[in-house]
Length: 143
Image (cartoon, rainbow, N blue to C red; front, side, top):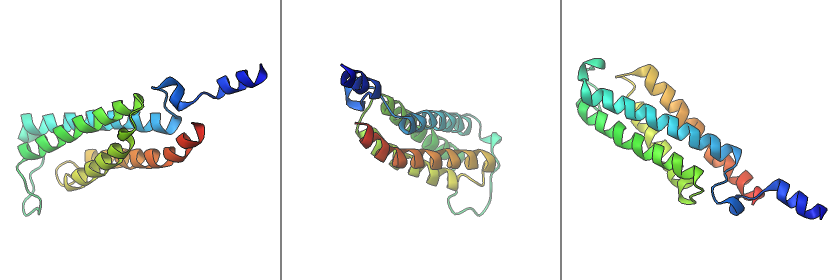
C-alpha cells in the first residue's frame, strides 16, 4: 500500500497526458508571452508604419509592412507551439526550439527599428530555447 502512495505522489508525464514539468511549463508560458508580443509588434508595423524609425542603408531593408507580417505570422506560430507544450504534444518541443531560433533571427534583424523591444524578445527566445533543451533531460527522468 505504501508503494502505491509513493508512486502516486511522483506522478508521470504519460499518466495525465496534459501534465508538463516545470521547465516545459516555463517554456510554454514564455513562448505564449513572446508570441503575443510579436503579434502586437506585427500589428503595429502593419497598421501604422509611422511608429517605427526607418533606417537608411540597412541590409535587410524590407518595408515595415512586410516585417509586420513576418512578426505576426511568427508570433502566432510561436504562441500556438507554446500552447501545444501544455497539451503534451511531442513535436512541440522541437518545433518550439526551431521557432524560437527563427524569432531570435527576426528580432535581431528588427534591432534598427525597435531596439529595446527586439532585445526583450531575443532574451525571451533565449530563455525558451534554454528551458526546452534543459527540460528534456528532466522530463525523461520523471516519466
